[in-house]
Length: 146
View 1: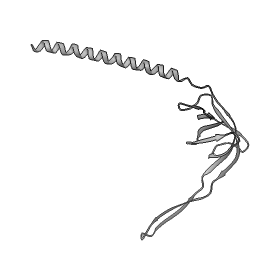
View 2: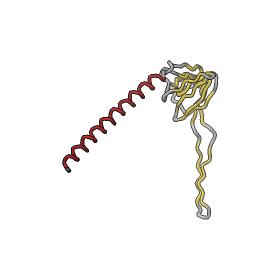
View 3: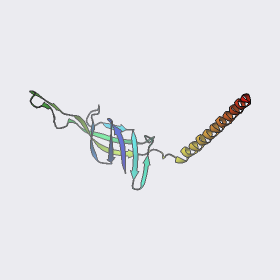
View 4: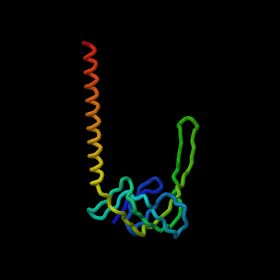
């Protein structure tokens, strides 16, 4: 079973027992964390996709390590202008191990189709009313001109 969840503005695909490096989380090493913004849960050909999230689904993880990634050099340079700026950046990360993936109830797509049909019938009725009022207005102006 795998899940796609969202944290720190990014999306991650995870399976049970896998280790991931996610954006820094405010928690101590050894603590457990729950990710409730689950976008997709799948197992084989059975895939449950949320709109946008799956209600009741959670991905539980244990924090293994808090750290910083390798340094990235940021260089700004303009030739023949005596301009050179060297800076570096080290991104904070949290390494987590996925403990469990729980799924919520599957949504029924039939309800969405029923609401679309209702909306379509309402639109048709509204257009019929507009056409009828335009015909009446046109008939009144024709009587005035003659």
